[in-house]
Amino acid sequence: DFTKSLKALHSTGHAAQIDRVLALCESSGRLDQIMANINTLFLARTILPNASVFLRSSNSLSWLLTPGNHAIKIPARLVNEHIWCALVPIGARATCSTSGLRWNLDNRVMKFGSLVSTSNTYSGQDVQIRTDGAVLWSMGTTPKDM
Image 1 (spheres, one colour):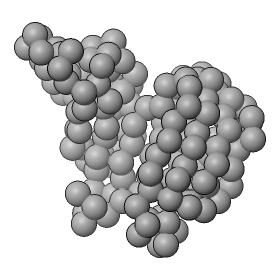
Image 2 (cartoon, rainbow, N blue to C red; image 1 turned 120 degrees about the vertical axis):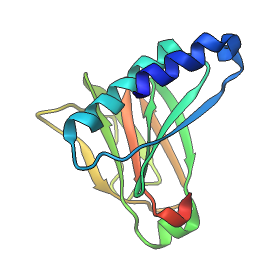
Image 3 (cartoon, one colour; image 1 turned 180 degrees about the horizontal axis):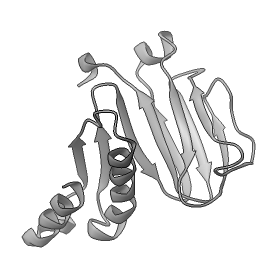
């Protein structure tokens, strides 16, 4: 499984040299498998602390944003076609501010049972996100984006 694969990468002794991991996955409609993959994104912070870990499916690219400031460059095609994006707090609340999205957040608290930022899109190619907690960034893609 995904977590075991990251642990295998760590055990090679080259973990410090790994800066990116792209995991190709499909959920087959199983929410439990999707949640397990998201949980592995959290675990990856300790298994491969120097690596950015991405989940790539046939129609999305997702990764965990840790507390701090993040800049994401969006391909023009995704902006022009109004492809979706989302910021979802996982596990705990997060206060976020954004720019470059159709519906920006201004120091808004997000948590389950309250606000989550799904079904958003882009207002430009440069997206900025500031968060004080871990949030899942997910963006729509197509197979031609592989």
